[in-house]
Image 1 (cartoon, helix red, strand yellow):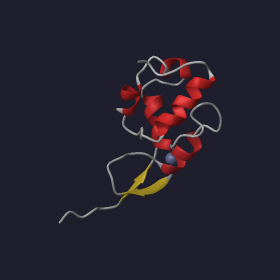
Image 2: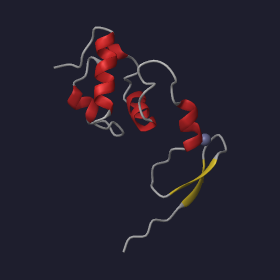
Image 3: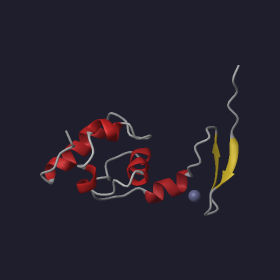
Amino acid sequence: MRTLKKILRTCPKGHQYYKSSDCPTCPVCEAAKKPTEGFMAGLSAPAVRALQTAGMSSLKILSQHSKKEVLALHGIGPSSIPKLGAALKKEGLDFKN
Ligand SMILES: [Zn+2]
């Protein structure tokens, strides 16, 4: 049987949190980083992080990638795609075909 061991971690900013996975993300920093405006505002924190990590920080850059490519990013769920699609359409853009 696999046991999930919670490990107390301290992020570079000094927040302490328990994580059972090996994902080294601090929930406090994560919440602070979450954009409140722009096309990433309605997305989940992992989705935002995935886009930022991939360098897709603007709709213009996002539009140079296909839905499939964006979905393949770790942290992007299927529910993020319609939100991103709507944001792209607002700017007259779309995912790459
Ligand atoms: Zn932190």
